[in-house]
Length: 87
Image 1: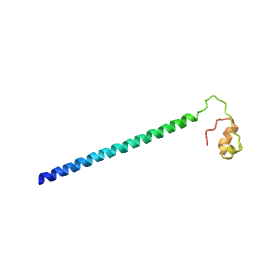
Image 2: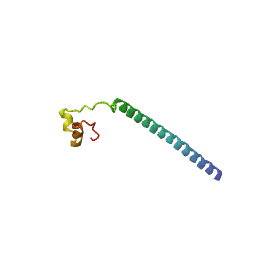
Image 3: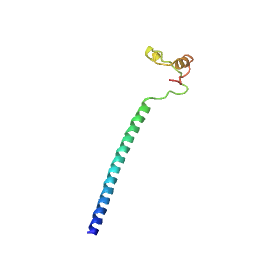
Image 4: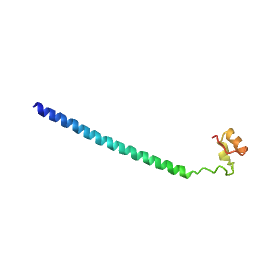
């Protein structure tokens, strides 16, 4: 009977290791897929908003809706003809 107990205990340990390994692999796969999806969306967003060329002339946005939300430092840079570097 002592040998049967050892065999049952060994089978239980091996089974739990197998189930744990499968569960870990599934969770790793889901994490990898989520990370890939997030990276793809971010790359698409970055490509959709192009950065102006350094030598392109700066044109200030003077619409009332834009002017209401900008800081005094940004307005001063726009008035000076400088491409704004502050929010």
